[in-house]
Image 1 (cartoon, one colour):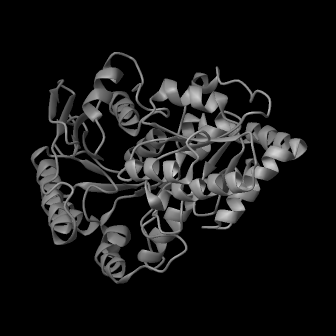
Image 2 (spheres, rainbow, N blue to C red; image 1 turned 180 degrees about the vertical axis):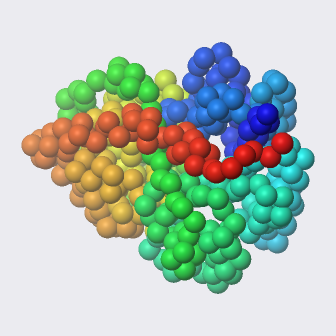
Length: 399
C-alpha cells in the first residue's frame, strides 16, 4: 500500500490558522476579497487526501492539529530589523523551514516567496523532497537593473530555479521572464496562475452613480513606493487649478500612513483626500461601489506582484489607471488607461480624461466585462496550478 501524500506549505506571513477555521466551517476568509491561496491549498489537500503541514511566520502565535492538517504560526527572529539582521533572520527561518519539512517527511514542499532566501531551500534536495517555489512578486524592479546585492542573490538562487525545483509557480509573465533570466534560460517548468474570485463577490457592486462627486480610489499598502504620495500631488495640483468635484479615497495601512495624513493636512486637501485605513471585504466592496475609477500608481522602485487591486477594479467594472510597472496591465489592457511609470502629471491627466470625457469613460468601463471570466476560472487558479504540478509527479510516493 502507498502511504498518504504528505505536503508541506510555507505560506508566508498570513493568518493561515484563521483562514483554516473559516475554511473548515465552509466559509471564505472574510478579511480577504479574493479566494486565499491557503484556502485553495486546503482544497487541494482534501481532494488528494493528502496530509498537510502549514507553517506561517505570522506574528500571532497559533497552532492547530486537525488530523489531516497541522497549522503552525512561527514568527521570524529579529522581526522588523534591517541590514545584516534581516538576512540572518532569512537564513535562520529557512533552516527552520527545511527542518520542519524533513521532520514531516514531506513529499512536496510548497514555499511562498518572501519566506526565506531561495538558495537555502537547496538542502531539501538532499532528502528527496520536491520543492515548488510559489512566486508572487517580480524578483527585482521591472524597469531597473538588479543592484549588486540582487545580482549576488540571483547567482545563489540560480541552482533553485535551474535544477533543484520540481516546478515553479508564477503569478505573472513578468515574474516568469525574470526567473528564466536568473536560470540563464534553463528554468524548471513554470506554471502561471491568476488570482481567483467568487462570482458573487462583486454582484452587489452597482455601476458608478453620476459623475459628481467623482471618486478616485487607491487601495493598497500606504508606502511611498506604492505611489500614494504621487496621488496626493495630483490632489494638490487639482486644488491649485481650482478643479472641483474630484475626491480621492485612500484605503490601506502601512509604515507611512501617519506621514500621509500630515501631508494631506499640510496640502490643505483634507476635504478631498480621505485616508480610510484598513478596509475588510465588505468595506472594500462599499468603497468600490462609490468609486468611479481606481488608480494603481506603483512606482518603478517597487517589486510589484500581479496587483490584485487591478483585477478587483475590473470585476467591479471600474476603469483603472496604472503603468506597466503592474504586471496585471497586460491581462486587462483595454480596461486600463496606461500612464508612463512614475509620471505624476500623466496620472492627473488620465483622471481628468475619465472625468471629462463621458464616451471615453464608458468605453473603458464596458471593456472591463470582456476580461472578467479569466479571474472566475478555477482552472487558472493557484490551486489548479498546484494540483497539476503534484499530479504530474511520476513514481510511487515514499512510504
